[in-house]
Image 1 (tube, rainbow, N blue to C red):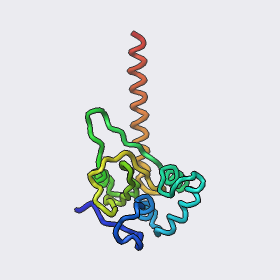
Image 2 (cartoon, rainbow, N blue to C red; image 1 turned 90 degrees about the vertical axis):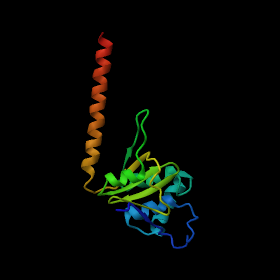
Image 3 (tube, helix red, strand yellow; image 1 turned 180 degrees about the horizontal axis):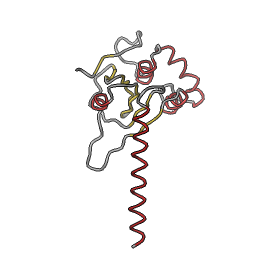
Image 4 (tube, rainbow, N blue to C red; image 1 turned 180 degrees about the vertical axis):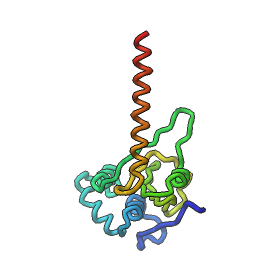
Amino acid sequence: MKRFEYYQPNFKDLKDNYGDCVIRALTKVMNKSWVEIFDELVPIARDHQCMPNGKPSYEDFLRRNGFTYVGVSNKRGTKRPTVSTFALKHKEGRYVARVAHHLVAVVDGRYFDTWDSGDKSLYGYWVAPNQNNNKAISNFIYSQQLKQISNYGNYHNATRT
């Protein structure tokens, strides 16, 4: 199954030149029009005194709309997952994937963009609220807590000797 699907909700950007990946990704994940998302971002951007596609603006917007951020880190000597592998492993749910200087919509195992960004390295992703993948977030947080406990035990044992 092909994971990438061309997606351009801005009907006035026929040549994909506007650099509106933030608005484009949000329209797909939130099932709203380009103008609706733009109009919701502008007041937030004004508060932050940045452009609607600026990181302070879209992060504030996502938080206000109940999204949860999950950072992706990689251990030394390993590669980060790509948008394509993330989509493959997340066959259900709505996500806004963050890669270098770009956002991509991932919905039900497919990613939507104006170009195939599947080979881009994933730095993190925002999880849409009210979906069944909240269990996945809980499992991720639990695994992080276990790592912290394990690291504390290693530290504690090392300082005792």
